[in-house]
Amino acid sequence: MRFFSKLTVIFNICFLAAVVFWYIEVHNRTGGNTDPVLRLPWLEGSLVILGYLAIVVNALFLLLYFIFYSFKVNMLVPRWIIIFNIIIFCCQLYFHFIFK
Image (tube, rainbow, N blue to C red; front, side):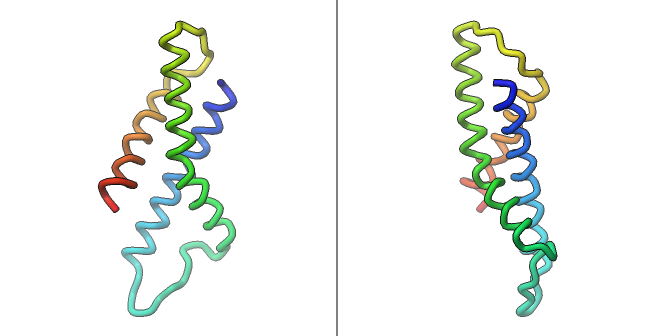
């Protein structure tokens, strides 16, 4: 569970990067300008794909955490990771289902 929690944090950071890229592209788009945000399009594409997959990984992590927590299984996951994932999951739900 510790490895999965760290992996989830990495996915959530990619989600934050994807949101920043989306914001920059939407607000810096001028008449016909289709330049990518980064000069490395493969890196930007990878971060965006990982960022959009983050909602699935985060939901699975939180579901497993609450199942283990309800059965009183001792997990060595730091509390800040749990709080960070819950906050980012709320932001992901807002971004994917309400904001867009």
